[in-house]
Amino acid sequence: MWMFPELSTFWFSFGFMMLCTYIIFGGLRTVVGIAFFGLILPAYLLLTFGWAIKFSNFYNLLPIWDHSVKELLIGSYNMSLTFIGFEIILFFYPFIKEPKKSKKWAHLAVLTTTLIYTILAVITFAYYSEDQLAIQVWPTLTMWKIVEMPFVERFEYIGIANWNLIMLPNVCIAIWICSRLIKRIFNIRQKIGVFFVISALLLLINFINTRQEISLLNDYFGKIGFGFTFIYIPLLFAAIMIAKRVKKKMKKKSKGLS
Image (cartoon, rainbow, N blue to C red; front, side, top):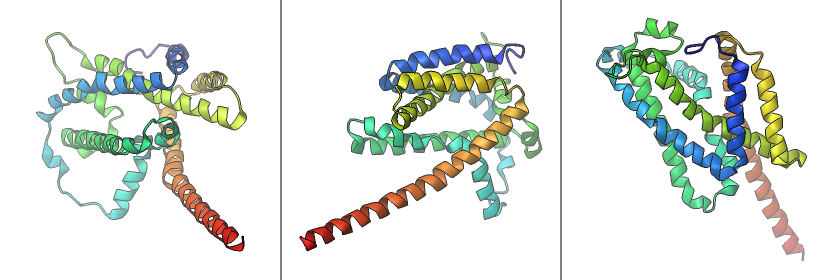
């Protein structure tokens, strides 16, 4: 929509999915490696938001605490799509060599992500007024338009191209998890599951052509992600803890009878 508005969504997605397939077929180590480089290589993009600071008015952040608790909770709920993703540790945990030692790194990763979101939110709220932010479709890209370098005139093109490196590991991880679930549930080879998931995605992509449809899809996935992360997982955890206690009591009773 920004760089190549006449480019076929299907053929771009097809090439992107072929790359994802190649990565996933390399195994979980390859997927994790891409996730690492998907963080390190585009990390310099954070520095580009420094251009927006000199045009920012931090008085836009005032007054602080002028929203009710209900409004803050609604805002957090609407941010569900942005925050979901940490639950993938449930799928990766069995493959970690020393899982107990990885806890601090998992918490550090969540903390780092939260800090990045907070910094970008502060810069965005300071750069735009409330009325401007209400009508901005791509606030990040619009901030990149003010980046000026001697050798780059339109930095947002570089930003969009590099954003593919951020999207790539997210897509690879999601497809790997889906194919893994297909293998566990239906006893089908994971490679076949990968082809099934990618074929379904390429089919569904043809029905999404406008920004409004993308926004609607994001809203649905945000609600589903909220339910899965903050309702289903806690209930599942409670059910497992209850089941373990019942099993312990049953074992004690059986030992006492013997």
